[in-house]
Length: 488
Image (cartoon, rainbow, N blue to C red; front, side):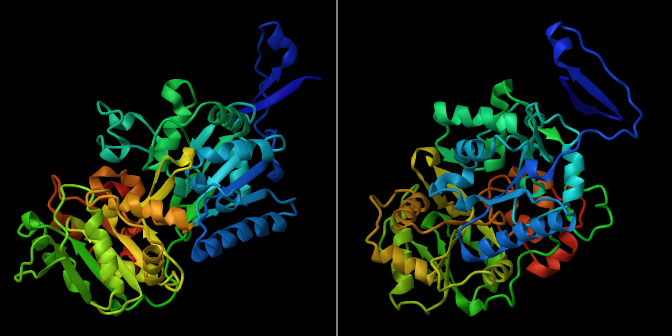
């Protein structure tokens, strides 16, 4: 009367409460045709990692509708499908860990699995149910498609420096799953112990570290059926998840004339970094100005009257925002602010911006977080490029928000301002604060990146030509099908 089951290859392992109490275990070998205990769809809670921007809400709603449509076609009662940005008013919910107490309390009693996925992740419900049934839902499981670092990297705080490849973390685009017993335990930990890290930089790595807990928790279990291959690939028959084949394009790319490009530089980099921009992406800009602490007619650069600082550059950035709305430059719908060591594809950015409404206060780039578990804020990390709609710039400046010093971190100050105004930061994984070498091969293999940052120990022109040359659609047609091993 007290038997439970777990699948083990083509066998079923039967667990008896009476035998466990008497320290006896046994294995019952049954024919492989006997089905393992199935997972009911109602036992799965899907959490779509959504955002409040109108474009991303539409994308997430389509993903939810697809899941529910599949359940209906199977004549199954539907699973719970949640959009993460709607679950509370807590701004830091995108960092997942603050969400766990809410998920555990609201859904822990009636669920066996929590499956997290991104807007672009297509799920084959029947296949996913088969996959989850292989794992004993009473145990703690952390399942996903593993990524690993080839070398220690700043975005992971140089973790596992002696052997970076030893630690595995999930590719969120393939979906990842945690069993309810693990969610319940983690939720209690989050409630009782404050999260230690101030900064949220690479969420997938940080979530995996938190779950692993220096070896006290489960490591990531690799699941081959969680895939990032394109939906129309012939190699996805075994896959429970796949990716949309084309990058986001919501009509014609925005015109070059709609984007004003502001490059932050300083006198000491006029001969080192600015020539790289001129050799690579400057020609794709219709409106572009270089802002420096020194007016150099040969580039040319504009002196905004803000002295150069070794770090932060908040004074310079806010002077750029003021100039953008002052009438001193052509009026455009979008402002792009980049560093002089940012490598960027403007044509791909034009394609991405077709998905966003410039009449909304859009602030777009690679999202980082500061103190999210203690009422902190999100911000766009500056090196990968910060994109603002004109409406966002107007609201920022009208609020009276300003730098507390010229060398304050401009991206973080802007994040504080946006948080105070309750304006969302919109994340795109196609912007990168670091170099290609700082990201896992398999992570970049299914991307059509928009930017990278830093010239340290690389040939920046070669990096641009390899990773960023070509428009959004041309790169997508071959880039998504390239073997990940050839990408770096």
